[in-house]
Amino acid sequence: MKLCKNYINGEWVESISGKTAPTFNPANGEELAQVVVSTPEDVERVVAAARTSFYETRDWRDMDSQTRGDILLKIADLIDANRDELARIESMDMGKPLREAEGDVDDAVHCYRYYAGLIKAPHGGCYEVNEGFGKMHSYTVHEPVGVVALISAWNFPLLMGAWKIAPALAAGNSIIFKPSSNCVMSNVRMFELLHEAGVPKGAANLILGPGGSVGEALASHPGIEMITLTGSTVVGQSIMRCAANNIKKIGLELGGKSPNVIFADADLEGAVEWAMIGIFFNQGEVCSAGSRILIEESIKDAFVKRLAERANAMTIGNPLDNPDMGPMVTEGQLNDVLGYVRKGIEEGATLVCGGERYTEGACAKGYFMRPTIFDHCTPDMTIVREEIFGPVVTIQTFKTEEEAIAMANDTMYGLAGGVFTSDLTRALRVVKEIRAGITWINTYNPTFNEAPWGGYKMSGIGRELGIHGLEEYQEIKQININLTPGIAGWYEH
Image 1 (tube, rainbow, N blue to C red):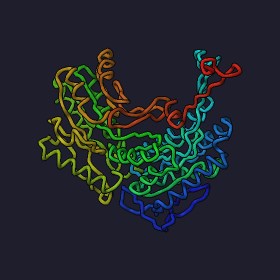
Image 2: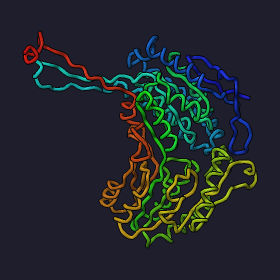
Image 3: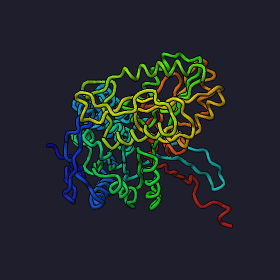
Image 4: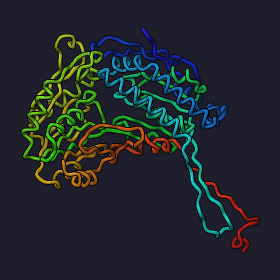
């Protein structure tokens, strides 16, 4: 049985407590590995290693950009060379269908390659300034923040790790990465590849353990200058409170309850297919999932009928066999989602299909759930207001564009949203009014390394990916040079 350890200062080590906990295959409930359970004492050890790396040995921080970029490219090549193994690990540990895991690995490769190239792009600036203080020259440079803690989510373990690790390392920081304790195995393998690629010891560290103790210790630690989190809004609020101790720089990518707005002139079949991807991709365990379908009243019945037919035809099974949907990540997550289903029924929504655990054949011991559709939903219902993070979608209707926009924005979240219509002018008008950081027109879910990702309102702070993703992990220093001798005349008086 594999033991997943911490990677600190270039070495694989057990936790100081010596404790471990099992991680399970969600398809059958069988144990996959043992994982060390770190404590705040381990956090002290990993912070010390990262600070030594950044402030004393400085191997990574002072490395020239070409060499640093070459190492990131080597990481990408190693991920690519181990694609099948990484995808299989991801599929077994998290539950996503194998083809989706393969797509995540490919995206991780592209992410490292993108930031390897971006290191060499122009940055900083020169400024024309007034001569009130004599003749001056002013310019800016981008520098690494320092020691950065990265806390990632369990729904895209390897890919979300790449979204954080690649830009943070590209910027020259020393990092401490903590994956979700639900899914650690692909990132343990990832750090083996970072080691093989030649990342200097202490520049990239991995710590495993529960968010409640390890995550809080990282967020509170005065030796950490920045922390980023992909997770729930509740956890994000906790991280913000902890980070206030030393006014850490912070980046949060949090929850969502995203609207998928469908007008009567949309291509019905296309809208159905994209709505399926919007809510049932990755078993609905997606922060940007189109979990609220807002549809023009005149086509609602036809749309729901077709959507239910497609949902009922979905295959469910072992993710390594590439079904349409695999299991939920844990039995606890499955039970939480089933609790929302019960709440929806109690509050008067119409259960169109699904809503129950799937236990047929080899799925009997796994954490599987049928794709679920609720019709006749109202804005006050719990299933409409709260993030479910599972394969559950709600249907609401509207009559006018103004009503659709108001309904789309009737949420504390603002991560994503979609609009389906054949009228491009209207589509652009509506997405401009939707208060969300990521929007799609006549599609749902495509994501690109080159474009920024992040939300409005209680869906987070800051942006990942794109040039913005690199700048998140940098400080901007202003440098001013006096080009004339002496001091300014006004000061002499």
